[in-house]
Image (cartoon, rainbow, N blue to C red):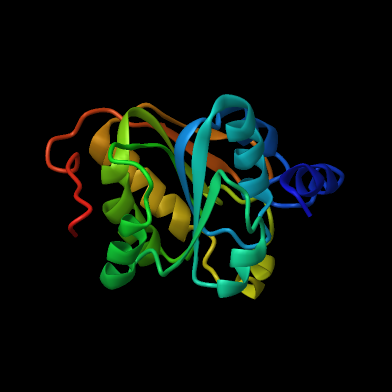
Amino acid sequence: MNPQQVYDLYRKDPLQDMWDYSPMLRDVAKGNILEIGARGGVSTAAFLLGVEANGGHVYSMDINPDCATLYEGHPQWTFIHANSGNVEDMRKAVRQFKFDGWLDILLIDGDHSYDAVCRDIGNWVQWVCKGGLIFMHDVDPQVSAEQIAAWGWVKDEPRRAYDEFVAATGWEASILPGRFGMGRIVKGQLSGIDSHSKSL
């Protein structure tokens, strides 16, 4: 299916975990976007529809190689088969970036363990431009602990990483309402994390 078909399909399912946020992601999507965690391509579809209208390119990183077929051939999409927290994979990912500047949007929605979320913050926030948007999914899930355990992650770990990061930076931040909670952070200036290199 193409991005519009996927977007339309999942707009019919209020239980889908991106249902509350897909319209917003579509509206803000422009420029260079990296999403960590692609899975079924729902957020990817929203981002792609946005960059089709507003210009830009979407990079989707996932450890599942099958995600490569989600929107294969789309001129504004690059799939990166990588573990976002692995240094060698990070180097491989950076070499696939088709730009020399900064990311405009970062979505962190990969491994939900506290350590992994912190690694994603540490590895990838440095690529976001000042004033760029950082989204962190699943920071306030309104579902049972049993359901979350069935998915293989601990309920409060993404939220703890989010809260600590916001407290440490002091950047403008809010949690968008919805069944799973989406953290939204506007990147400010912080010396020491605003440098990056494709020669990693």
